[in-house]
Image 1 (tube, each protein chain N blue to C red):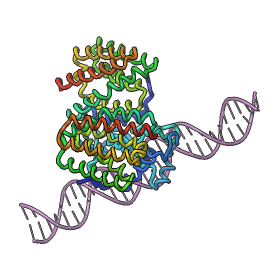
Image 2: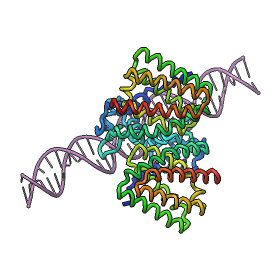
Image 3: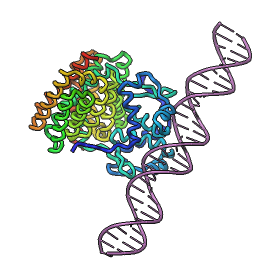
Image 4: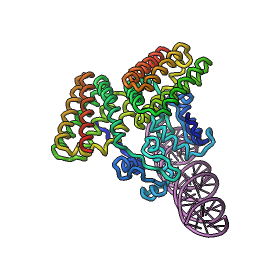
Length: 213
Length: 213
DNA sequence: TTTAGCATAATTGTATACAATTATACCACA
DNA sequence: TGTGGTATAATTGTATACAATTATGCTAAA
């Protein structure tokens, strides 16, 4: 079964701030004050503060005496994130090939097939969403919460820069095919192959991002 | 200059909870309630909650309907952490060899020399502290906040398991020598050597931990 | 005109009150 | 004796009030 976790209204409100940073609505250098966010999001400062502390830990904002300064994600950050992902995500794929459950396997397949479906529909937003799903499922299938906790934020942080990729017909198609191959390797339990394919997939993704941003 | 950042009283109080989880004072499965922590630490629930949300994000606790359940670090986590560190920290060392400033270099040297000094004094606590310093300085010298933000929490989370290493005469001595060699490679700007030495250093550290825990 | 100092305003940090939720224990009833 | 339901207690979630801090702008003097 695909996760359909119910998310509380409050959580949605909070995630809004993170989303607005990661999508670039709040630009680097912009100062967010608690009272402004409180008004804007319609909740009191208390929950806003909790979320700001969390974002601070994620290094997406920093305290600046007066207000929280948006840090956001630079192109240099993207380069570093892909360098780390290239070296860690292949390990996660390898572990997934070893540790995945049957249920996780069918979730992975479902994510790949849906992504292909949305590719034929030219639905960029949903392509991107299924891409997220696929990678997150690989992290989860590794059976390691450490890998999951390291990789989820890294993947999340490059979402703005993946926009062009999911909108590019050729790259979106290649990406689906690469996912298919990775899925097959994980299904076969071929750790070496899963690792190699994932490394190449991330390399390809980065090359495309570098050429379009 | 070595960082002597002034830490507010409140921050110290908050970090206390994290420290108590990472050192094992709060055991896995133990339930922490906000009011109990509030009494124990002498601050109101508001700042306690902010810290709990942060720890939740670090995956050190999880909400359990009633109270926050301590997750902590398992031996499996340690295995995964070292696997990731082995693959990422060598990249950080390589970047450090390329990007380090002169100031960072002298800070690194100072950390190595102090660690050796405390080794001759058999001061395990300070050996461990200088070990932290050294690795954190390497992360910082990489010039990448992404690497820093990924590696600092991973290194922090294995501190309980490093206890035996800093108390072992032979391992503590070997560790100092490995740090010296890594420092030298970073100073020379030899990225390949820095990477290889760091990878071996982490491998050695993990082998010792596995044999003593 | 520039600058020091002070008053004021804006903002954060903390405590507390109250509402909403959830677990627990107890009692009645089968 | 077991079970269901309800009252109660404990806990979290949110709002708000107030204190502490920090920026800002104004005034006065050099």
